[in-house]
Image 1 (cartoon, one colour):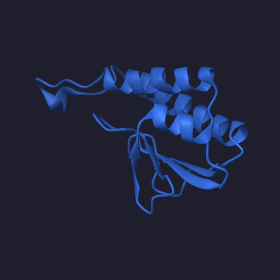
Image 2: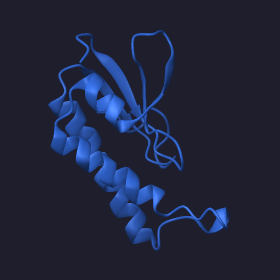
Image 3: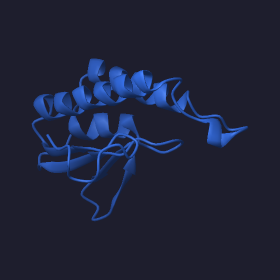
Image 4: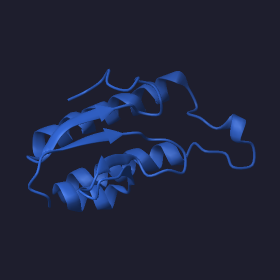
Amino acid sequence: MTSKAVELAILAGYDQDPMYFDAQDGDFHNHTIDEAAEYFGFSADLTRELHEWDDELQGTFNLAVPQDSGFPSPRHRHAWIEKGKELAARIKRESPVVASVDYQADGYFQDGTCVF
């Protein structure tokens, strides 16, 4: 776990690592949930819930017909977005080294409009 406060963005999308931050190597890039958990000191419970949340999105991807990818209803998509928002707020509360969390879901929130 780092000792320096670091900004984190959650950029969930198909087939990409959702955690975007600078791991003190001077290069912001996407990291896996497990990398972020180790770096920021997430609890096992928070890490598991982040995996479940990301798995839910990844499970809606239709590789055979990508344009048919997506949640089965707007209600399901909204619930996923709200769960991610709760997890983003929880990351900020639970990790003393997270300076801020910019939650963007899968492009639902614009950069910098949903920050904890």
